[in-house]
Amino acid sequence: MKILRYAIQHIIRKPFQSLSVVLILSVTFLIAQLFVVVSVGTTKVLEFFEQQPQVMIFFKDETLEDQILQIKAELEKSPEISDVTYISKAQAVEIYKDRSARLFPDKPELLEFVTADMLPASLGVSALSVNKLYDVSAQFEGNQFVESVIFQEDLVVELTRFTSALRIGGAVLISVLLFTVVVLMAIVVSNNIKSFSSEIEVMRLVGAGSWYIRLPFIIDGILFAVIATTLSTIGLYMLIPTVEAFSMNFIAAVDLISNHMEFVLYTGGATVLFGSVFTIITNYLATWNAMRT
Amino acid sequence: MITYDHITKVYGRGGVTALDDVCLDIKEKDFVVLIGPSGAGKTTLLKLLIKEDSPSSGSIIFKDEDIVKISKRNVPQLRRNIGMIFQDFKLLQRQTVEENVGFALEVTGSQKKEIAEVVPFLLEKVGLLHRLKAFPHELSTGEQQRVAIARALAHEPEVLLADEPTGNLDRKNSEQIVELLQQINDWGTTVMMATHDDLVIKKLKGRKVEMENGKIVGDT
Image (cartoon, rainbow over all chains, first blue to last red):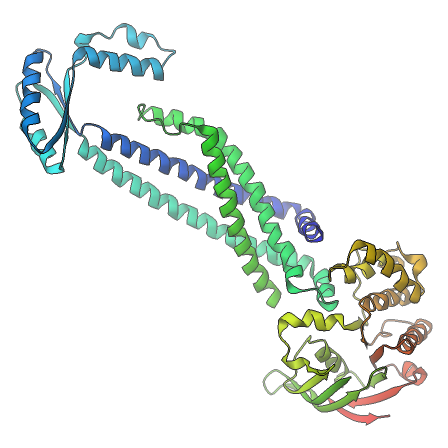
């Protein structure tokens, strides 16, 4: 309890210094947590597209259902084709209405004017290899019955590249911020040790152990980490709906985070753990360095 | 009890020789006064005993152990056996007299109940029980030094080191402090005191070790 009291004294004696550390730590942790959200989200998006039929063939309005089903049967004969899914015009309308009602419940006008004539029938083709998909895509480009062919592999490749770049960029940004935190905390610890130099001198003279002297400065770091992660986790909880709403504009079909509270609690808990370990190590090294001089 | 065996201390490369092959034996319950001008090596001799610094060569035997060789981890335990007071008192200005003395017990793990019993006992010994709640800036210099002495006695040390304890005191307070130190010695504590104050030296009974330029030049 005495050691905790000393740690709290360090924080109270220099309130602006303590505030600056908490703010920078909070921002760093919040960015790290948002990075986790983005990573989870992009992974889910990638998985979604990887599970979708990888070539979509959209047929012209005048193409008869029998003709489409014949094409389907031909494709299914190939051993390299793993699945062919037929979506009729009526089914396409139902899918559209269902998604619109779910995503835009306050815009019923989106459903009013949509009829089966407006949406094309389609075949979704999945294959065992990318090369086969290239063949299928090439086979139906320009076909007399086909309106358009969408090859989702391109999309998946681009998305993978984008996700990798995002993760690398995020990791670099967070590393820079963490390094800033390390430097800042070293300065803070050094200042605190100078500020308490008379107490430390007396402690050494009367036979206090080195851990008794160092521990309050290390506990400072834990207190900062706990306060900062609490603030960042509250910020995360408030920002998640905004992030989700933003992503809906692009990937409405993917539910990024199914249970907000659970996600926030797990992320917050992991951040507290990481933050505490990080600040313990940082402050231990800073204290060791400051006290040996 | 304490043996300085061929102790030499040189600061810097080819720099100042603070102690030059010093040999000194101190028995239990001795009152040893180190006298000499500034720079004679008196303070260095005291600092080496509490491992505030290390000698360039030689050994220091304290209670059958060569403290030159003890590890950093064991230094706090050594210092609990040796009390020390200074010319500038080294009191914590933001704490009361009671808290200053109790601090020495607090940092070594004593319980509140024990501290509450020991602190008044120590302050009574130094004649300051009535000033328990005062802050250092409210005390005279003599009273501040007595608080420092009470704190130094908190762990019942076998040795009390005093580095120019009367340096900031007037004659009357100096005499009182010297009397108190002699009283502490009478209670059984070995005392080593460094001073260049002639008036104090004249008043003191006990062994006088004279130092000059890092050497012992007299021992009476």
